[in-house]
Length: 267
Image (tube, rainbow, N blue to C red; front, side, top):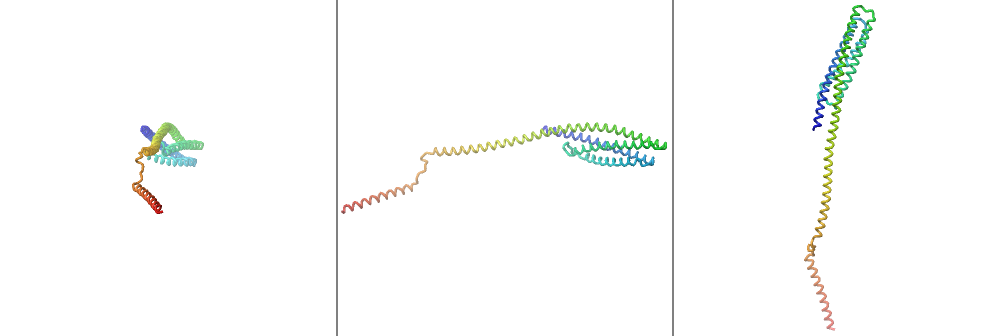
C-alpha cells in the first residue's frame, strides 16, 4: 500500500512539473510569434520605404516561420486541454517533441533576425536619402532590441525548462524503481499461494495413498481375525441329501447279501 501511495504521489508531482513545462511552452510560442510579427512588419515597412525587392526573401522566410509557430501553438493548445498525463503516457513523449520543435523554431527565429539585419545593413551601402538612411538606422535599432529581448528570454526560459526536465528525469527514475519493486512484490505474492496449493495437493495425494494402504491392511487383518466358526458351513439341505444317499446305498448292499444267502441255502 505504501508503494502505491508513493507512486501516486510521484505521479502527482510529475503532473505539476508537466503543467509547468506546458506553461513555459505557451509563453515561448507566444514570444516567438510576437517576435516574428515584429520582424515581418519591419521587413514590409523597409520594402515600402526603400522601393526595392531586397526584403522579399526575408518576408517569405518570416511567413514560413509564422506558419510553423501557428501549427506548434495548436499542438501546445491540444496538450493543455489534456488533464490526465503521466510520465509513462504517450502525451509525455509529445511534450518532449514539442520542446524540441520550440528549440528548432527559436533557432530559426534567431536566423531570421540575422538575415533581416544583414539585409538592412546592406541597404546602407546604397545611395539613400538622408530620410531613408535615418529610417533604416531606426529599424536596425528595433532589430537590436529584438535580439537582446530574445537572448534574455531564451536564457531564462531555457533555465526554467532545464530545471523542469531535471525534475522529470528524477521523478521518472524513482517511479520506475518503485513500479519494479511493486511488480516484484506482486509476483512473489502470486507464486506463494501457488506453492501452497501444490503442497496441499501433494499432501492430499499422500493421504489418499496412505489411506488406501491402511484400508487394505485393515481388511486383511480383519479377515485374519475372523474365528473359524465364522467360516462358511455347508447347507442343511445338502447334508440331508448326502445322508439319504448313504442310507440307500447301505440298504442296497444289505439286500444283495440276503439274496445270495438264500440261494445258497436252496442249493
